[in-house]
Length: 310
Image (cartoon, rainbow, N blue to C red; front, side, top):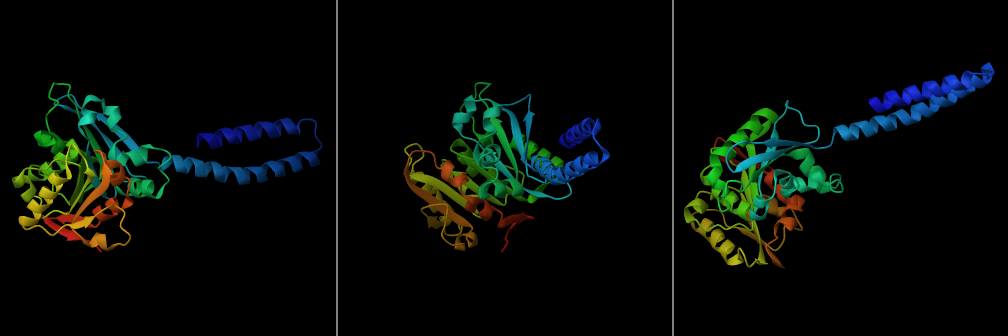
């Protein structure tokens, strides 16, 4: 609105200057020209203002205790507390432990909201229109570099509860995902968190606790990794999948990618993707696929019962 006000003031000044020394006919013709130009330009300015108003909003929250020193909240475009929004809890990996809170802002799904080149892509719009994203930062400020996410379940529960209450999070559609150490946390948190979970997406995370794996059998799971990962090997992932299936979980649909050619993957509660590539980075491909988020939104948790939505 400030742009419109300044534009109107400028038009008024120009018109006043033109009136000085001009015949009445010329002045009226000038006024008509200005009015038509204003009619063309003002809608464009309004559209520009509205586009700024509908960008996703990022909120930084600092904490004063524990090794979780703060978190980022990413709110959807058109966010309103009058409706409820699906919530994604993203857990970063070990490399981010030595960084500051600002570094976490652009990791995981939020990367496609913070990158202006991605905001208007189909993926950016899907994420930015659909989810409240919570990105906490696990720091080593207290010298606890090897602590894991599940060691701070109480703090995480408090953060999630605060965001859900304050920003209209949907308790029925609460999803957890994380990479590397955060992938490990994604496997472990379901056994210790008090919040009902609708689905999890662990990415290249170690998962060798049979008890914790057994506690996830009822959850929708999309597990991803690289076949050539020397840090968290594909054998670890295969063992986790086998443990869940042996404990009574649904059989995993095995895929070589996260961009299926048809929509039948949406019908499966358990999916395992092992990319045919080297290295530890399975997260770029995972979080860069809209299919992951569309799959999440198919599930909700109502009173402990997982529902699949067509």
